[in-house]
Image (tube, rainbow, N blue to C red; front, side, top):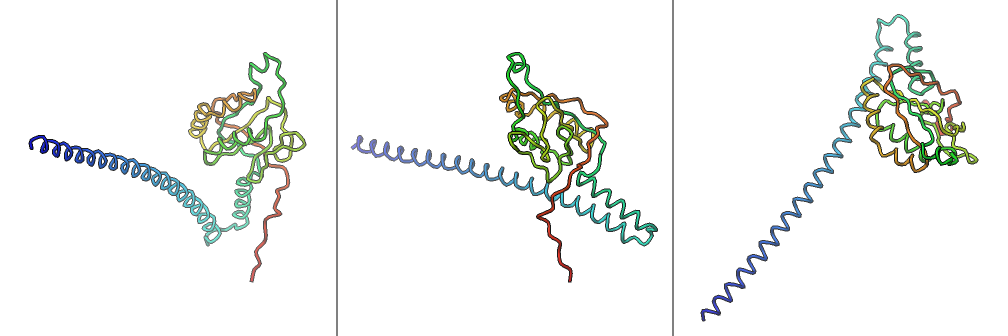
Length: 238
């Protein structure tokens, strides 16, 4: 009788222990899932807030422009129009600009030079990855080997040559000039690119990136080619 009671007690303890362990694992799994979901929501919220901030900045700029036109105290509307056209040209990259920034020198690696490795044009996809890394920062303007990069710029292979704005890029070494919104942003960009894994991608292709110290004044050339507007359509007025 005593053995039977002891056996039943053992079975009951086993069942309770098993249920407790199962509940503990379930709670842990739920916590992990909730934590992950919360982090994803926070990331999405951060992206939405950044977009909202950018939209507010654009709205503020447009309101300021409209205010110049609607202000009755404005005695020279022609001057306001010229200033607006100049701002639009700067935004589109159609004029030379001067400001703080850094320079990158793309050159053959020391190992490639020592071994006599033949250096060819930089692959378009590698150059695009570098441009994407640079464009992680807002307000960036750049020129690649003297070619101004704008929204419609294409980096691609044409007849075996890497081109920017349909212009062939010389075999390394060549320079990339990057302009930031301020010296502080230029320093941040320099630090970011210094630590970026993009260096490993370039090293595989026997290339290196040398980053200059941030400079107070760098000049970017104007985009001097015709902008392709074949996909733009004028709206019809009533």
